[in-house]
Image (tube, rainbow, N blue to C red; front, side):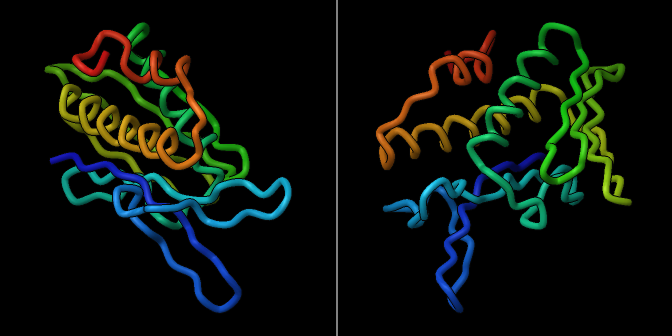
Length: 156
């Protein structure tokens, strides 16, 4: 089973918390050029591949994932750095409709195989939920990234 989602980090002095993107009715307050922080949560058959420990610029992370999905669908393999985390996220096609998902770096390595259709559906669903909420709350649009995320899928 594959589940994916997005959480935003709300931090104000001593009160900090993660909020599921679907439950957000506003964005965290940002100062100046601060990034919108959050995490992508990706769990495959009980293995947390991406989790809240990998908090980062959440818009940048979803842009990376969208590009990786597009690359994977065209080449059956994709790898990208998440520079501020000093990790690499990779997707590699396996026989029988499976895909190896791995995260490596910082002395940590997580890898698990998933059903390709289930993985792509879960990531696309979560990515579209994220971009929908950002459009609703921030009034910004990412048409190129959405096109990459959804290329060749029922989400078009």
